[in-house]
Image (tube, rainbow, N blue to C red):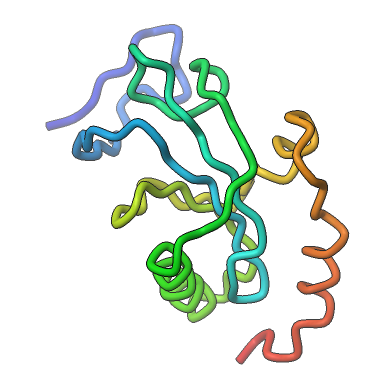
Length: 136
């Protein structure tokens, strides 16, 4: 079946779309992956009447830590990304599910600054620049 976008979305006209299964959840996490490991994360608390976790849809974000299981999942995802040459990405998850992997524009770093969360940009860039296993 071919997706037909409305005329005002001409760039998408006649193209395919991706669908994902709806998995009920009230909180997700945006995790920044750099140099093969999770380096920053924030929780996205969904608005009561919303299923999307972006701030544009009223999600409230807070700094958070990863559980041991979430950290292990992120390390596994980071290894798979790294095998494809991807050293910097953002993933959205609600354990044990990974909803999205953003490799062109990972987001999250600027979002942290906008939300008043700790700015980890310098540490993340340094980890990418000093990554001695890059390209392996």
